[in-house]
Length: 291
Image (tube, rainbow, N blue to C red):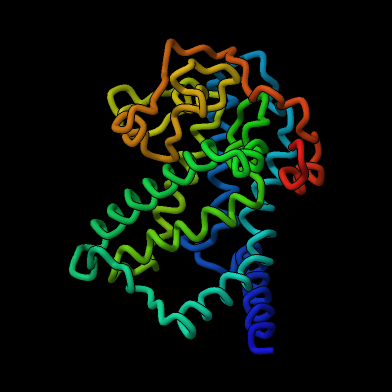
């Protein structure tokens, strides 16, 4: 009964917080709902002003599907999963005495807020990069990740088209990353959140941008386009350019692949024609044999 109450309280709390965000009752610094919309409109505007693939429609293929995914993965799914995470946290603390600082490798409490955020950003990005590789390497995870790679025309909203099972996988790894950083105050984490969303939107946008010499540090639209390429060389059988925000991990671990930019690159994967075209078909994709 206690866990059931914990679940519903977390669910209602997330619903109320989302509604308050929609109604502008949450400060802009923490208003992820309107922050997402603002970033999306800005990057979409850049796409329209400087399109790399000029023949591609402003309302490209699956534009509205990807738009729905943005709100589903960030808000609707979060409402239902928040209670599950609350229960897991309580069991971890009560039954296994796993405290937030149990596996901390570094104490950030004496660092400046800016340095704390920088370390948090780098550690979290590395964990997500590593998780991304797992999604490609293991077939049972790749089944779910196929939803993201079913994008056939790139645009900013493709950033958040991904199967809800990826939330299940990414969240625990993000929590572990946070636990590694003892003394970190997550109140300012919204800065990292908005930066990551902006970079992710740009990486999927229909623009030609590589940041010049900074391409070896930051992921970019030219580099990430090849992550979605249907055909890759033999030495990149499971994929390439796994970077989330920082491309440096791909260059360090030799998973980078950026030939001469080709705006007409064919996107997808070998059997992408089997992917359902609608949201509800993709919602349950990956669970049955043959997916």
